[in-house]
Length: 97
Image 1: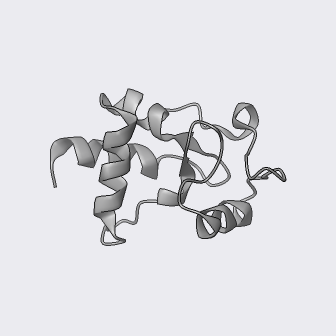
Image 2: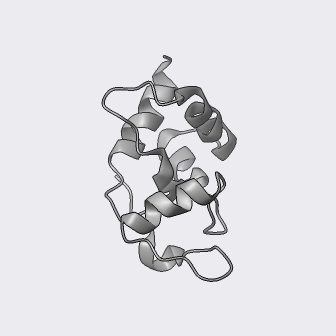
């Protein structure tokens, strides 16, 4: 694993349950673009120890890019989504490191 991906995963591990961050937020804190964060998460495939809570990274519109499973995991943590499938980023966003 490269150093940038390791930094991305470390940031995501710090997002507390019930909070979210956008791909862009993580990218800004890690020093890369949002797309790179997406590539890093796609490379995971659930193989990391300790696990990376991938479900806590959502798109800039406040919606889940990875579908219903991601939304269900977040709802189990207390994140609320409206009928349009978006969450209130002003309320549920993690302030970062």
